[in-house]
Length: 203
Image 1 (tube, rainbow, N blue to C red):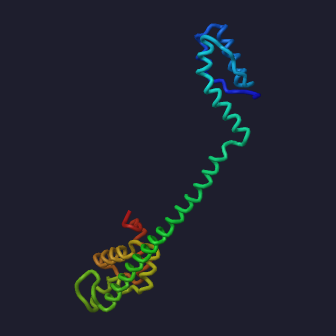
Image 2: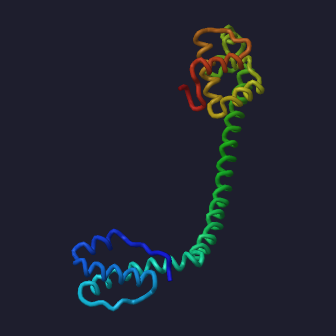
Image 3: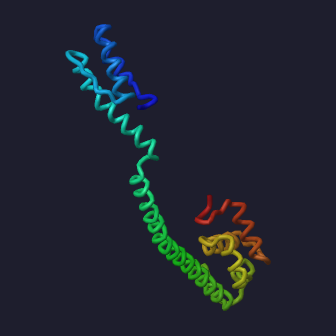
């Protein structure tokens, strides 16, 4: 015995062309079958209609019985098995991401080291922008002459991707405008802020 069953709109609509007598017979047959497991003895149109509706009533009753037993444990076991696989996939991708990150850091260090080498050349008297050597009037406008390796580090701390481009851009600007810059790091960072420099170029 059951306390209820699902009665669909499609059931109701399929009754609409039946006579009142057949409607009552069919309705009584479905209720007795769904609630009390009584197989009706029908003839004619109600028998034909019942055969069409019975599979849906049976499916609903099976769901009802499964629900009373706590659902379908097999499906839950399958879900539990798939979870570790998802975690394993995530774990496998992490080393690749770490490798990429290491490569990125390595590239940045190489760029910074190259800039420091260029700085050393400047101190020895060669011009970073090309041309000339030795101390002359242009050295007053050469920010490379006034920078230390630590200054390069400070610029790269703020602009790790484009520190070299930023220093060179400011160098050319100072040289062209013939400005004398005694403390290059604040000047370079101030320049970057004024022009809207972002790590990757100007905005």
